[in-house]
Length: 141
Image (cartoon, rainbow, N blue to C red; front, side, top):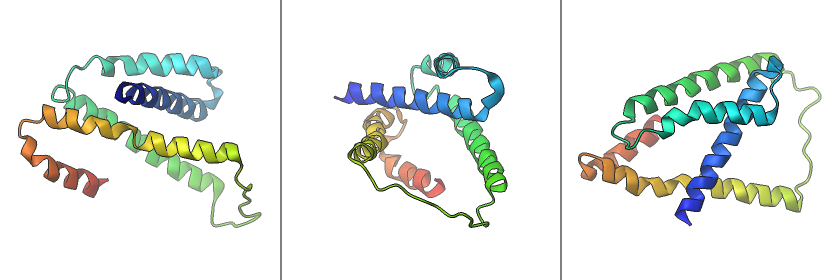
């Protein structure tokens, strides 16, 4: 079950990444399957890092880069949409059975990565500092 969760989480991340690139570079002319191929090739070097200890600098760079990009896209969208102009206002469809199941799948996806915690603890030089790491991680996030 844990392997299936890791696999499906990875697939969902690739699909999210390719959709993000497709929306960000709308005029590129690439189809969805082509973007999936591009992001898979871009992600491939990260998959070759064998342990968390060796990947800390790659993770720092690959964590900071999307953060900066997401903040820039957020400000661009806010300036483009101008949410302070409330016309015509939001309109929502009532939930359907399909949308409810999609919501449940999102909850399952959100908790899919928690199985990595034991792996991270195993890689730590001093595993007893795990609570401190979690406080810093969630404090900064």
